[in-house]
Image (cartoon, rainbow, N blue to C red; front, side, top):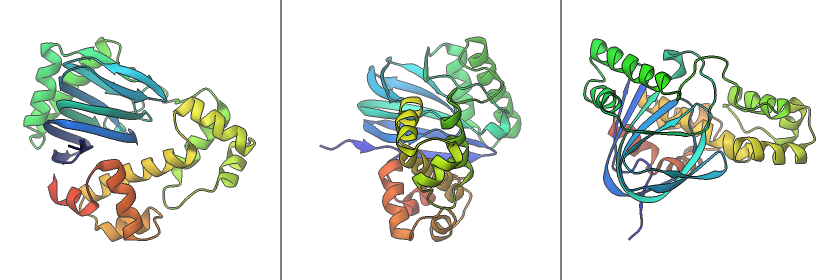
Length: 257
């Protein structure tokens, strides 16, 4: 029996810069993707393997995972349930980049996540729960506010900035190398070493994340595909399903606002 893919079968809610995903227990795998927001995931299940920024890591049983914006990650197949809270940087300001972090699910952290999940559309409860969650992460060293620098390799940093700012079309490697001021073959090698994937794969996954946000806000799939530089709706649908696990239409239907 094949594993459930990514967000297939999940409840997804968007509310004021916060995305909440509730996943029932299932054998589930996540293909490579890029976090464009702060991700906090409370998992219920045994330890399993993940890949973060190109390195294999052990995600402990019944633990919290923290993903900084820019984290490139994937997850091996595992029999788990989870609640994931993704918070837009617009709600927090810039945060320092840190590798994927794992924390014990202490009661106060569990309660903050549960309250956010239960009341995303109640502003007072949502804002209070978010403040408690962020303060809990900060107190445990899993979150630092400050300059959001993903890499100390200047050429790679210039390449990432250009890709993040150019989501309406494909970016040719020659163009990217010119912006980065680096030899294109050297750039690909350094980009993979620093970021954990290739420039093209990174750019595609950031565009898919932007597409998820656009679909959740009510934009039509065709409009989203065209605005993000996909050749057509079919081309968009293939890439979206490969990363997200469901079609754009299914994602839009099951996402609550």
